[in-house]
Length: 117
Image 1 (cartoon, rainbow, N blue to C red):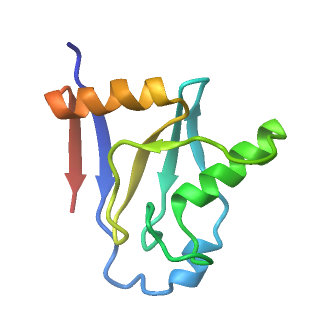
Image 2 (cartoon, rainbow, N blue to C red; image 1 turned 135 degrees about the horizontal axis):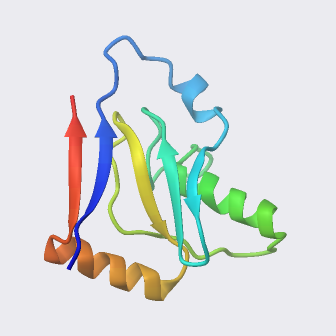
Image 3 (cartoon, rainbow, N blue to C red; image 1 turned 180 degrees about the vertical axis):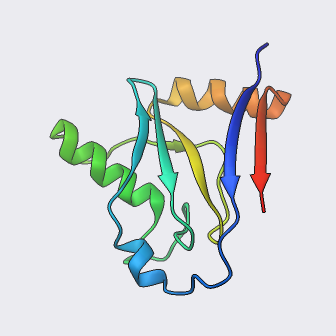
């Protein structure tokens, strides 16, 4: 099975203002019917934030709702998260089937993650 590569950059020590980051425009690196790859800025949590707190998953859902004029719930699956302090490319599954397959690839070690400090 071919290995994929995910690049992640460590946050710069001087970057401390989370407000500017969480209000930054949402950057989509790649998109198809199965995947959404986004550029996660530093200091933005991937998921699990309290209600009303910005998170990458909520920004991604809002993006899908606006782009495709989808009312209601939007399924997106985080298969491998990035910690809040780091930035980098994050792959999000747009379907449960894609989430299952990506999760299995991560579990088998078929995805190569690279961390740059």
